[in-house]
Amino acid sequence: MTTINWMEEVQKRKEDFIKDLQGILQIKSVLDEENATPEAPLGQGVKDALQYMLDLGEKDGFSSKNVGNLAGHLEMGQGEELVGILGHVDVVPEGDGWSVDPYSGIVKDGKIYARGSSDDKGPTIAAYYGMKIVQELGLPIQKRVRLIIGTDEESNWRCVDHYFEHEEMPTQGFVPDADFPIIFAEKGISDYDIVQQAQPGESAGGNVLLSFASGRRYNMVPDFAEVHLKVADEASEVIRNYQAYIQETGLEGKATPNNGEIILTLVGKSAHAAEPRHGKNAGIYLAKFLQTVALDDAGEKYVDTVAAFYEKSRGEVFGITYEDEDSGDLTINVGVMNYNQEDGGRVGLNMRTPVTFDIEAGKAKIEATVKEKGLQLENFSFSKPAYVKKDDPLIQILQKVYEGQMGEKAELLAIGGGTYARALDHGVAFGAMFPGREDVMHQKDEYAIVNDLLQATALYAQAIYELAK
Ligand SMILES: [Zn+2]
Image (cartoon, rainbow, N blue to C red; front, side, top):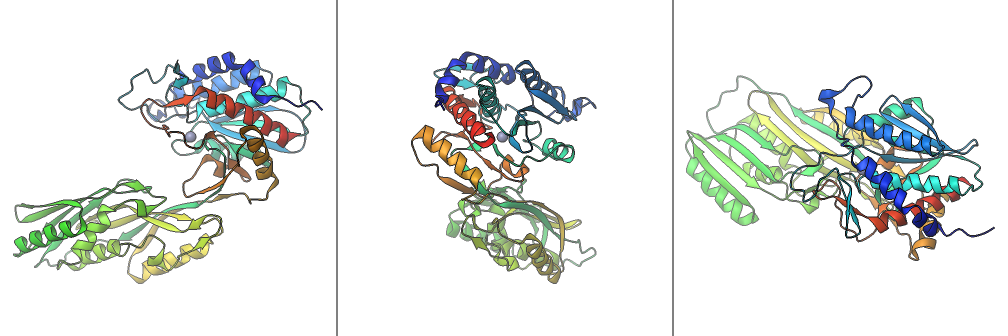
């Protein structure tokens, strides 16, 4: 059996690769529900990007299928088993501040610039060319290989939800939508709300918590909080104490008197919810202060609910602390806090659970704790973890491919964040960002290093062959 020089095969196709990549980068495939039609449920741009991939595949001799204009696939080979590769061709809006046209795909200094160049059109085209090389070399494979193309990864995953309702789940596969070498464990992700009903008609002689607001997203540590207090007569004392608290915590904040009210603001530090300890939660810090102020019963109850999470991001509040060797600690981020006197309050949490955590038992404990305090648990959602054991043949094959081509150890990564890999029953994230590279996904001037994409293509080509042979 002759050995294949994968990189050489990729280099032969470099010009076409760049041309085909530019073609899809030039389609503005941002979710556009306002202009949705039955044929283009996520907008015309998204549909055009999907169609582009299907046309490309048909031209190259793959069989293709459009699945509800939400997803599609290109397939080669024959056999019982199915190897799946899952990429996406939708992009987040380009935003401001670009120094080049975000939908040009211009190549400068070895980098190709465009929204989607690194997330995820570049890696998807790399996977496509991986398949194309295996096909063009006529290599013997015993399984079917399918490139599945999603179009709603950046928003609601309606693409994969719909796709897997109607289409076969691959036996195994990988997802080129994250980092090299291999992400083998991703925590489960759960969002839920703790709700406090309004208590109308309460007499309000002393201080009253009128409103409390902090955070807009469950998956971020909020960096700003604002509270409106109606104060009885010790307004100056509250302001003095707050200023002392601000000094003590080293955070920025203000107490502003306003017509018999005081407005308190606090600036914390934002961070991704996957590790709340990397941030300073403005809402929690402000609630912690408010525990030292005499408040109305409802206000006090809300403040206590939030402040309970002060320096407790490991599930202590619900008695569900948990860790496992492969994926680490359970974490809880307090992402969204909203309260006002008329409507009551809501605390929105984002919980990341280790891969071996029993979510049903965990949910029951949360519910019990919440009920005991006279609160309700609402909007509980759970995205199951993605996990393939370290000694699984899928991992071993991808490790061998990576180490063989890269000449360095293929470290296995466990993360608290979620990748598209969790849409597969038995899949891992495999690239396409190499270790140490600047992460420019979702940023202005997003780019991909052309040589990295070509290297990724070589890895994908061999991985597809090794998995399918
Ligand atoms: Zn992506």
